[in-house]
Structures are given as structure tokens and as C-alpha cells.
Length: 479
Image (cartoon, rainbow, N blue to C red):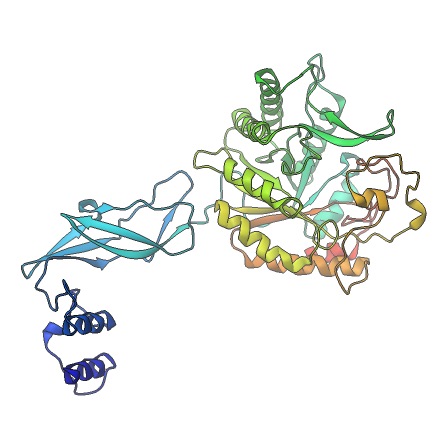
């Protein structure tokens, strides 16, 4: 009756001197809770099949982990799960090994999911969170604060010492394809190799970036932006011979640089056509997988990751990430690039959602592989008005960024403020293992994308002025 309901309510609320019989444990789990009150109400209402008290056979959760931990490539363990079979008033303890456990969705990390366990035709369920343990992959440690080198010739002892004194501990260096069409080592590769050695000897950690399939870059002979393949040879299609050449190049550079570099970025921003040209999605995926496997063959024990420029094409970036970061992937971490407030719309605060969105896709450590805000001062006299030329970007064409950090003047002080906001966001995310500012130094030569001097695409992103003196932004890293 309503008297019983009132009494149980008082008991559940902890009212003093309120007692009820043992039968109030309606579901037989040894506890009195609101579950029992609901069950009692159903019994009193005559709901078919609902019993009150330990009169039916039931499978009960005695203890279950509220979360369970796994590393990439491992199965989730439910060793902390204990159940009990209550039958005929007798309670029998069961361990996880006695139970049939429904499969988990390993891709659903840090979000509750319902797990069902069963035994002898009885079943029950509980909620759990699957998490990774945050273990860093081999070859990389948390706390990287790096700078991307756009020109190996700028990695001089004085510049490196200034960067190191300003809190930079790593330099990202692009490693070109090592062979020419006749199989000889190229001078460009030798320069990059020497730069890696010099960086390591200076007390900074090199982060090496393997060659891309090619690039939409300025060609002086054509006086235009054209596609250039960076893999030498007469490849009319992306077949086995092409990927064998890619693998040979990756094995060579990883092997030669193994004493100096344990962290490799595979290619560059494969979700934008600047670096993949006419390749299909399937060809890009094969290129990345081939490169990552070959790098690890050349230098076992290194870590690898790709970097995507998500906001430039989120749909393609997310497709590639989900296709590449499988459970048997050779990739250990994911790199994120973006230039909010310059090349794409937004502010530094947009990094928060960007990190969350991509970590939820892959649940591997995240490295911020390119972030920056240019201190470029616009010069209308640099705009090319003859209209004959193809440009990768309206920035190259208009000599002005398409987006601004609203309400902020584009100055070196604003650049420093931008970096401060970003670094504070990165530090709040335990999954972020490090970051690389683009770039190490301001460039006063021609832009590689359009061939024109003073282009904002390259000229004013640095931590250092072109003369090697520190900009205010470097002081933020020192803080």
C-alpha cells in the first residue's frame, strides 16, 4: 500500500528510526537503492514477470570496473569484473572467466558504453569507459616544444643556440627523397642529413619528416605553379614499381638517420592536394602505409605519425585518419596542423575543439605538428596583377591572408599572444605530447609555392627574425 511506499522512501532517504524488512532488497544485489523502489512499485502495480525479493534466479554484478585500460593492439581486459548467480536463495560468485561478455567497441574511448554479460541463459549489463593508458610510443616523449625548419641553411649554430635558450627543444626537418634517377645520392639529401646531425649535436632533438609524393610548386621555366613528382623515375601510374621506390627511399633515410632521430613524420598534410596532386584516396593511403612500414624497417623502434591540416578539408582528413589508424597500423601518434586566423577561419581558441574531434577518432597521442600566426605587414605593391599565373592559394595571389584574428592587429605582439593561448590549451590536454611552431625563422627569399619574394605564405611566421634575432613569440616558449 501507500504506507509501504512511504516507509521505503523514508528508509532510502536515511530518515532516523526507519526500518524495513530484508525483503526490501528487491533485486537481490545486497543493497537498498532506488532500483528496489522502482521494482517494488512495479510489483504492487502487478506488472507481469516482476518479482520482489530473492525469489527468482538472477545474474548480479558484484563489482565491475568503471573503466578499463588498453594499449593500441591489445585486447580490453575485464579482470576486475565479478558477478554472482542467485538461484534458489543461494548466491554463487562468478569471475570474468565464467561469463560470456559482449564485445566492446574499441573506437568508443572515454565515453560510457553498455557491456552485457551472460551465464546459463541469464544476463545483466553495466556501463564502462574504455580508455588508453596514455603510454607514449617508443621513440617519443611528452614535452616536445619544437620549431619547423623551412630552410636547412638557417640551422646555424647561433640560430640553434638562440632557439634553445628560448625554450625550444626540437627541430622538425624535411628529408627529401635520397636518390636521383640513376640511383645516386642527391646533394639535397646530403644537406638535410647534415642538418639533422648538426641539430642533434647542438643538444636539440630532430623530428624528421619523410618526403612527400610531390608538390604543386613554382616552376621557373614555366613561370607557373605546376605538379612536380619527388620520386624520380618514369612512373606513368602508381603501381608496385612506384611504391617499391618509395619504400627503398624511406628505408634508406631511416637507416642512415637512426643514430640521430627516433621520431618520424610520414609525408606532409596528405589531405590537401598541394602534396598529393593527382593521387586517388586509395593511392594516398597506400603511400602513407608503405612509407611508415619502410621507415620502421630501416630503423626499428622509431615512432611514426602523419600530420593532417584538418580545417583545410575535414572530410578528407577524417577519412584518411580513420583508414590509416587501424589496430595493426604502423602509425603511433597523429599530428595536427592548423593556422586559425590566417589560412583558415578562427582564433587560437579553436584548437580546443580541433584536438578533441581528432583524438576521439583515433585515441592515440596527438602532436601539434604545425601551428602559427604570421606577423606579416601587408604591402599592396607586391600583388601580382597580370592574371596569367595559377596559385595554390589566394594568399599567394593577393599577398594577404584570407582570415584575421578578429579585433587584433597583425603584429609581432599579437603573434606572441597567439602562441601563449595555444600553448596553454595544449598543456591542458594530456593526450598532446608536444608541438612544433611554424617556423624557426622568418624567410626573406622567394616563396616556394608561387616563386615571389615577400609572399606572406612564408615570410613572417618565424620565432626568429631573418637576421637571427629573437622575436617576442620566442619569449612565450621560454615562459
